[in-house]
Length: 113
Image 1: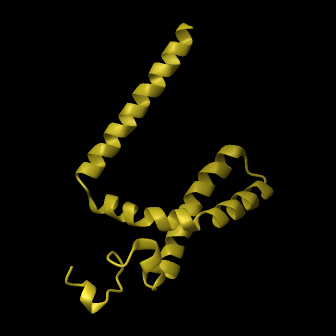
Image 2: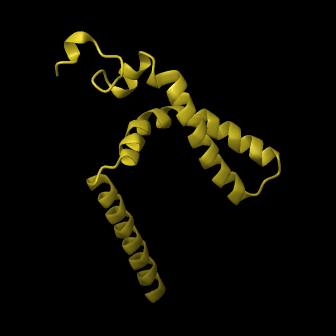
Image 3: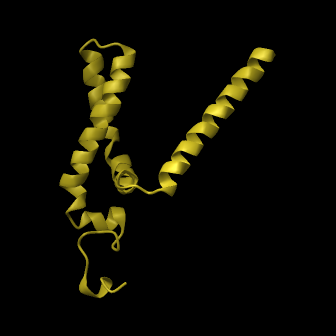
């Protein structure tokens, strides 16, 4: 019973720590945070297929569980970011994903807003 209480308290304190760190980062809104916010939706939309293919290839190559998870996260992020810049960022699709006011492609009557 005592061990369960310590485990629960540990999870709570780690969650509060993570919340505090992310709050401090978002509150001071650095260029990195703005870039990650810009990427959040497009990377979410693009990540599934690369993640499945990369993990299947790594498992097929005989890697263990930890290397597969770590390399899948890193490679999927990189491929999704490249996919965002190639397929979405500088195309009219950015209107659908990011909204017309955040898109680089602005109509003249929208620029005054």
